[in-house]
Image 1: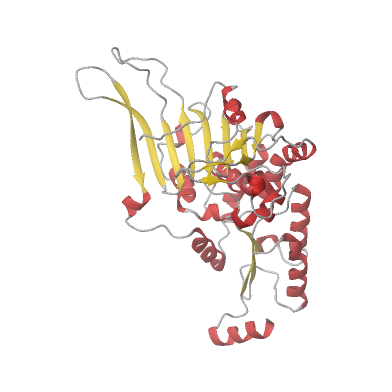
Image 2: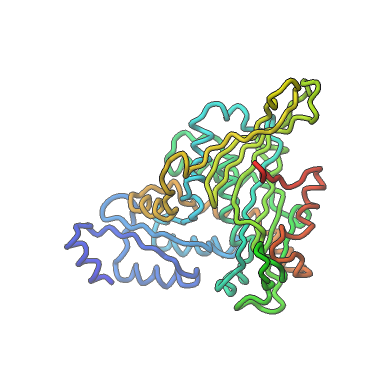
Length: 398
């Protein structure tokens, strides 16, 4: 490897700059780092030539202790600013637009707080099962695989304070503050599920999780997770952030729904219905979209109110396909821009949120399966919101 890199330096003029991509299990990281260091393939700076940067793929540990151990292994060889922890969700255009929508449009900032926002709901729905990832997924589960990383990062972007610049440390500092302000999860505010056999949208038979390849027949790993999260900050105190993330659900969908508080008085006489609260939708995939649900009057002589969606579809508006998230992230890493990568304190704070729940679940195995493949998860997920007088929002039909 050393000889090949030296040859590339000579042919391409790369001056000894190195970007290593570790898409490996965490158990292999210490050995890889030792070999890189032993063979003088790393420098101790991230920006000045010759620089060394290391992209690290998740999982970043399986709990807080193992994540800290992994961080220590990196720091034994390189500095923190040389480690680029990648989360492909942060490279998606629709996720990046959370910050742009908030901080480039002055109309939203006065409303972006507990005084005007009733609740936030995040849905990460997958129609597929675990496929050929059964062995990996069974060791991780939905909470570690999806919520601890992707979902909490989205909440951090939604709830962060305005940074003093769009520089990496300024952005990541504000995200870390949000994660630090989150109340650790407990079993009362969370629901787990595992899919059993069911029927797909086309009438096809779907196997249960325990019948998937490389999955133990008595597995108690969750394939569905729902939770109520609280950000204990001045801006967000009292505003619930609901998450549901699951496999073998009826739709392939990742979106954020921000429900604003309703109008204080029904002013329009003759209307057959009460005005519904406004909802801002940020759809991440499959078809990126930003839309706002508002109340308008139906044409005619009566004050008949109807909800209307004002929407912007990325594909239609920009007339160009969206780039793959990894394209942006790899380019940023090559350019030394870490704004879309996670810092060690973000990882640590995220594990602090989910660790107590995972420890409880480990000691109290669930009675699985508890939802059929092709449905929206266990009934307990609906009951979680019903306790607060709410239900999962759906904008289907607009």
